[in-house]
Length: 90
Length: 223
Image (cartoon, rainbow over all chains, first blue to last red; front, side):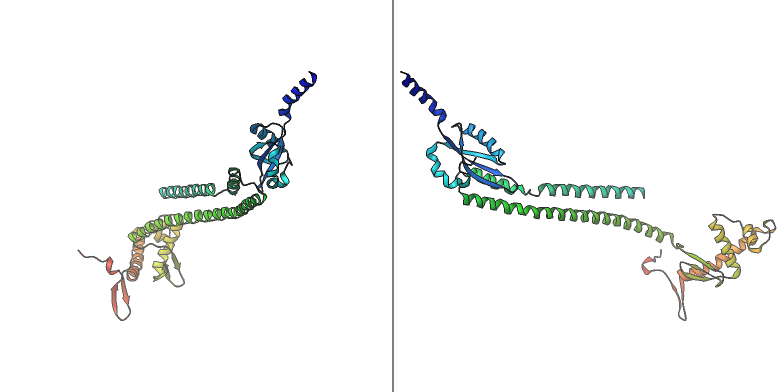
């Protein structure tokens, strides 16, 4: 009975702990610099990811242009090459 | 003359206003250096597949070449400014010259209507001559004296009666002088000077050939 409850609890808690990633585009002005990056986000939702990433990038001096998509760990590998140095940096 | 001044003031104000408006229009319409950056940025955002490092580098280079053009734009601005200042100065100068020419034309036609205008008169006692507009006229001692008296009175803004003229020339007191004596002196001066003036300006003597009227053919009419 107890183990069942634990399993049930874990099942409920699982989506909250699911690893979510977002790929985004950001820029810096004067001179214009652009980058495409992938970052881990806490919410698997595009709007929430946008808000979260904007703050994180602004702290590093970048301006978020847009978030392209939010995906799970299975999408990481195909984006690794494009993001290069900005892969999971912010 | 006052109306002319107002025309000049209005003209200068209009020139400055028009060129100022043109300058503002030009400066506002010159593209901003950042225009290029925003285009590149939009290109980057709108194309989701522009994600590889090489493509992004290329976009950055595009934006940088646009930014380096901004220095050229700044020099364009200063060149345009200098040219506009020159244009304003030239237009103002030409307006002033135009008005001056109009005023001069009016004065010249007034002079032509008034006939002889004395712009300089030099009385030389030694040479017993008077130079009017650089034309030399010989006078007798008495006529020269009368002219000198009249000139001195003119410089003091005085008007002399015949008796006063006679008194100054002869050195006697005014009460002892006759009005008619002064009038005679003036008449002789007029005769001597007028004769020579007319011979100089109107009926010219050409040595050993004769006489000719010193008037343009097109100025003559007979009715």
